[in-house]
Image 1 (spheres, one colour):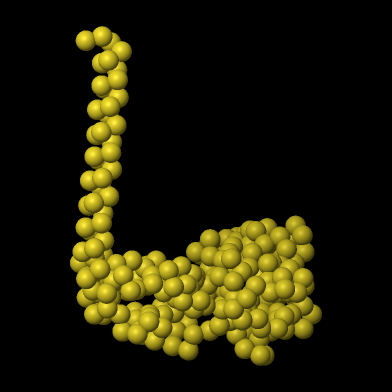
Image 2 (image 1 turned 60 degrees about the horizontal axis):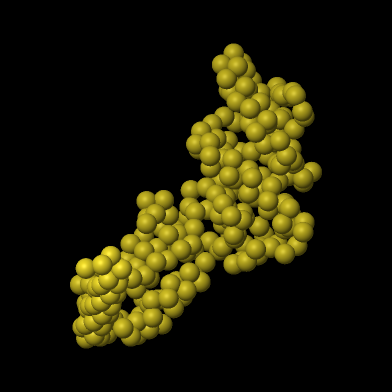
Length: 264
């Protein structure tokens, strides 16, 4: 047989095999989808991926939200469930950051929830809210409080719920307070030590520490790392020599120096 005929026959054989393989997979997929039309949801499994960090929602709350939207999903055909709509519905809950919904072959509807992680809590005269690491603000939850530093005093903004702020001044202030919250989050020692961030009548930030009776004047929200370095020096070199009761105030607001006030 001449080489040209060999090439032609090989090409024909390859084409036939390709068509046969495609037909097989199309037929198998058709059978699988046809079989799934009669499959039903047998149970719902909710997984809170970060439940050890936050408890803003419960598994039962998630199930209740789904059932209110879609009716009781257990016993319904799998192909009648709109998983994308369920994900969108749950993501509209302000404390939910991300949702993934899918149904396994054994009829289990699995809902995986990732909650928002607050880095700071802001309390004003009108109310309070949390802010996560993306500057998203969301309301406090009645049955659960996250263990994060609290901002109090003359907070220079109005409460804005479930949205990113539009005011330029508000956005700038929130950006700075977020930088402080993120700094504390990344430094476990300071995050545990700083209990409250207070804005006094002069507009200065005061830090309320868990240890010691002295007041910490932080000043504005600039040069955060430098000011904490100075506070670290105060704890490392001054407190061991002078003790906790010698000073009533440590002022960090001035560049390159620490100003300590003796108790009267």
